[in-house]
Image (cartoon, rainbow, N blue to C red; front, side, top):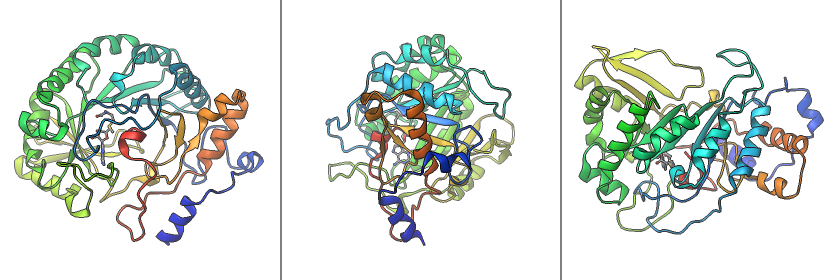
Length: 369
Ligand code: SAM
C-alpha cells in the first residue's frame, strides 16, 4: 500500500475541477481528508549563514531564488482570506532577508477571515519566526515592535564546541545564546529552542538541555531527525539512517532519569509536540516525533518556498508554482481557486521508514522548516 501511494503522489495528477471542491468545502481551505488548513509556513530566503552538518552540504551555492516581499504578502493575503490563522516566517535563515521586519509589520495588519478555536474571525494573525538566532540579539526588539508574536530558535547543543562542530561556524554559540536572551527580554515568548538529536553526535546534550530550559526559562523541544538533508559526501556531513534517530521513548526515559517528568496537556489538537514539565513545575520540554510517532492526521500546514512554490507536505514529490500564476497576471479569485485545488490534494501522511520511501523533491533548508 505504501508503494502504490507513493507512486500516486509522485505522478502529476489532474487538478480537481473547482466545482467538485464546492461539494466538500465549507468556505475555508480544506484538503480531501477533511483537514482545515490554518497554518502557513513561508520561506523568505534560501540562503543560510550556518552549515549544520545534518542539514546542508556546507557548500555556499544558493539553489532557489527569492521573491520581492510584496509577492509573498499578496500570496499570504490570499491564503489568509481562505482561512490561514498562523503564519511562520522561515528559510534558509529568515533574518538574512532584507525587509523581513517590514514584512512582519504588514502581516500584523492582516486579520483572520474565519472563526477559529480561539474565537471569532477578524483577529490578528499569530505570527511566528524560526531562526538560527545568529542575528537575533539586535533584531529581537524591532521584530517585536513590528508585531512578531513568538520566536523559535534552533540550537542543537548547549556547549560551545559541539555547537560550532554542528553549525560549522566558529563562536556561533555565544551569538545564539545572546539572541535567545534578547528575544526573551523583548517579550517574544515563550521562546522555544529546537534541538534536532543525532545519535552519537549530540545526544549527550539531552540532560544539559533540560537544565537549560530550567535556568533560561525557555521551552526546549527535541526533534527526531527526518530524512531531509542535502545529499553530500562533504567532510563532517551526516546522512540520515534510522539508527541515527533518537526516538521519543528514549528521550523521555533519559529525561525521567534526570528528574521525573510530568505530562502537560496539548495546547491544540494540531500540536506537533508532546509536552512535559518536571516534578517541581520548573522548565518545559516538548518532543516532536515525526519518525517514531507521526502526527500527520492532525496536520494543518501548508508551505510556500522562497521561490513561491506551494508544498503541501514536507515529503511532497513535487511543488506547485504559485509565483508563476502571479507573473501570468492572474486575479485573486483565480489564484484562490488554484490554491484550493492544490491544497485539496494534500498528502494523507508521510512514509518515513516504510519500504519504497522516496526522499522529497527538496531538502529541509530549501523548503523552510
Ligand atoms: N535557519 C532557520 C533555523 O535554523 O531555524 C530556519 C530554517 S531551518 C531549516 C528550520 C529547522 O529545521 C531547524 O530547527 C533545523 O534544525 C530543522 N531541521 C533541518 N533539517 C532537519 C531534519 N532533517 N530533520 C528535522 N529537523 C530539521
